[in-house]
Length: 598
Image (cartoon, rainbow, N blue to C red; front, side):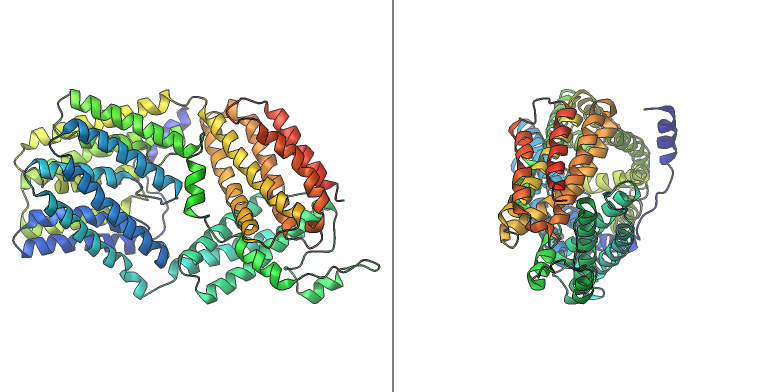
């Protein structure tokens, strides 16, 4: 890292970053944590309440998502956490098997969470609760009781996590729709001023990217929320504007008129047809249906998992790194005779499980180490005070509240609080250990886990950024070619064609994110392929715009001819290095063939 980067990251240790309001999420998490602890305290078995709190981490998944989607994700998280605790209980007393299961769970959970865009906290808690469940049964707890209590805690967290929807059932969908409307208005205004013969470059490209992302997020939110009619209607109007602006740019680029329908009403569109030009009739109901189904948010889970599992991919690289780092951390911690190997495995997984650039993951590891060091001192202080009963309930709930308030503002400060919270819950399963031993062992485990993660991060996949970007560019090529097949066949209304446009739309959004990460990790090697990626993105948006233009989409023969160069690109294995200039020539040839519509 450069000196300015180091100074920036040093300042980030204490800086509070901007964040959406977290109080609703934090209060719900604190209440969810307090419920099983209070029940345990009232029953005279607070330790059982602490075991049940393992399931409370359910409430952290999709905490601000729309209701229907949140209900599903939290239910799956509840089952996953309960199953992880069950695996931990099943492998109790078999340390080698435990480490192997920890590694497998870390890899599988990371794959599913990243591929399906589950978001924070991701796969971390599945590994953590497995280790704590294993520890509890190893120290004599009844395995069935541990699993049952975890499930009970998860169910109570699910109920509390859904409670705010009684007051504001569609808050998330409304905010996403408002954001999309604003971004699309800006894009449409820019498209109206585009010079003849030019595409979306510079500022206009940024406006298009912002509108595309906002529209994708809005459709995702509205669909996840059960498609409330008022918001669907607003979003359909916004998407008409977006599609009209995209089609306008395609028409401007290709020199084709008339202006597309959508941004104006049917009469105004007819008025735009000049003397002597034929006014092509357009079936408005069919077109509206095409629009609605082009951007329904995220693709299906099956598509996302299949694409993520196709090597090479960012997700598989992340999963392999998680597997290597957690296995190495478990091995080293075992050789050092650390009693709680799961803590080292958890720390290794935590650094890598969400991915990002090497720099981002390294900073995450540093924050984890420094935050844990301070957090262990706080935990030692808590052990010295030995809080019991309602004081312990209050402290644990307060810690959970602080974690959720800090985690999006400053990760290092959040770890300071996460450490005593996790250890208070975890060590309730193994009472009686000396304070100095617990603190020293957890410090060693943290150092081992973070060191193993960073070692794997910086020694594996040196050529990965270039290969991953080429692989994602291939996904854009495949998605573009499928839409062009539909255009060539004049089959834009089929269910498969709608899915093809949705997939292309999604891959174009992802392409920019993947390219920026790859460029940050290996600028020199990636830069030529980044230019290819930009050309492919321009082509992909041109093809989408063609689908929405009443005249361009009828040029079936032109799109059939344009598929040839794309097929040449797809014939080359993505793992075989091919000069970026050769790929870009093929992309330009496709574009020129499409431009032959002029």
